[in-house]
Image 1 (cartoon, rainbow, N blue to C red):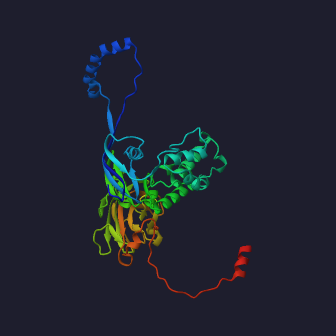
Image 2 (cartoon, one colour):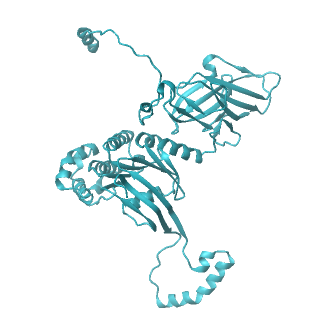
Image 3 (cartoon, rainbow, N blue to C red):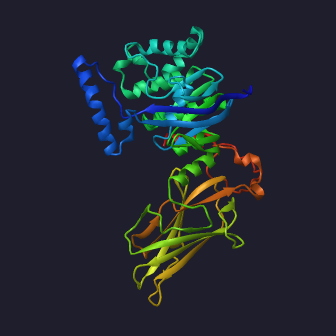
Length: 446
């Protein structure tokens, strides 16, 4: 194992037995009756096509199968996947809570884990006692715990209840203290499983800030979450799990893009047939059947430079001819659904009249350029009758990728977590203007 590698997993697999229950103790009479009835039960199972029942076996499932990866020291990795993909099982194996059925995992460094609310807490002990207990489990010396104690209690906001048994805490108090202990006791490797799904917005923001701080301190973090925005903010790389196997490894943007595309019937091609996309809304009466992208030279493309021109064309089919005018738009969103841009034809008072009973029309928008940070973005086209409700809005229809080129062709512009917009601007040295203190005081007084 390389000295710079914090976690090395090879062929990691975990099998569970399902559909079974623990049998209670049987009397001698029940044991004899079961032995007599067993051949008839097996024959009945075979006739019903139940091979497991006929063989007297228990059904099993692989929660993880042949998972291999490496995490370098100081790397922040997002573990992404649908429910049941094996994310929590992976963290439990790395935390030594459960043993793998096959393969092995080497973990170099002291591990702190927050796999569920209050992991490792004893309900009968007070908050103070649980902090010292968790610190001891992590291998911390008493003086190390005491040095961080006040900071942890202040972060958790449980000063008044620190000497109260945690069984009397609310779930929010429990979570705040558990996260404070896991994050502040300075483990070399921190494993976090969907902790941000619990708690109010203020607490979630505080957790994200603390995890950002942990990441910048050079510690290794494995972060499981369904919150794509949080994963992008915190992580540099990502691993996508599907049915217990590694489906994708790469940058966090590529991992999110893979996960999003796999869970939505969309395409990243420059021409996208949207007829099969079921995630759409509108009053009906027509639909967008396809979307096409082209770069500034008019060539098919979905990879555009920041601030460079491109065009989007939507092809529309109506169920019946209408003597009306249409309006259209294109929404551009982050992968977590946050809307960033809404290009609308009515912003320029542009209308598209339907003439001669036509039922098919193509509408194209020319975009002068978008100042979006490098990454992958969702495109959602829509159209409506003039000043009316939307007839069709195709959600998660397709994707475009923004990359650094020209004036932005520098690695310093592709650092993670530095914003959403990257606009071109002109800077100059200006004349210094002293502050009028008296005038400022009058404004404050008002």
